[in-house]
Image 1: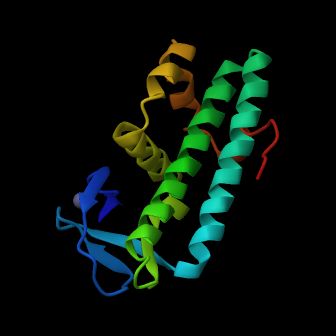
Image 2: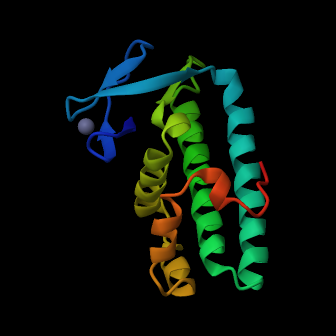
Length: 162
Ligand SMILES: [Zn+2]
C-alpha cells in the first residue's frame, strides 16, 4: 500500500504490518499513522463525501458571485476531502477479507499544509478534471497559494459547511 510521507512530500510504499503508531516507508522515513476501525470506514468515507459535496456547492455559489479565489479554495478543500475519502476506501478494500483495523496517515487529520500536499498528490494520481479547474481559474491558483497561508477561520469568513 502507499501512504503519504510528510518528509518526502509524496506517496511512498509501506509494507503492511503490525498496527503501530509509526510505519516505515520505502524511503526509510517513519510515517505517523492513526488506526481506524474497519467498521468505521463506511461512516468516515460518507462524512468526507458529504463535506466535499457541501464544499463544491459553496464553491459554485462563490464562483457565481465572482468570488473566484474563495471558490478555488473551496474546490481544493473539496478535493482534499475526496482524497481522504479515497484513501479510507482504498484502505478498507485492502482489509476487506480480514476486516482488520486500517492505518491512515496521521497527517491527514493534523497538518493543514500536509493535507493540501496530500490532496494535490492524489489529484496528480487520479483526477484528470484538474485541467478543467485550471482553465476555470486561469491565474493558476496563485490566489489560492496566498489564501492557504492564512488561518482557516479567516479563509472561511463565508460559511463553513462543516
Ligand atoms: Zn519519506
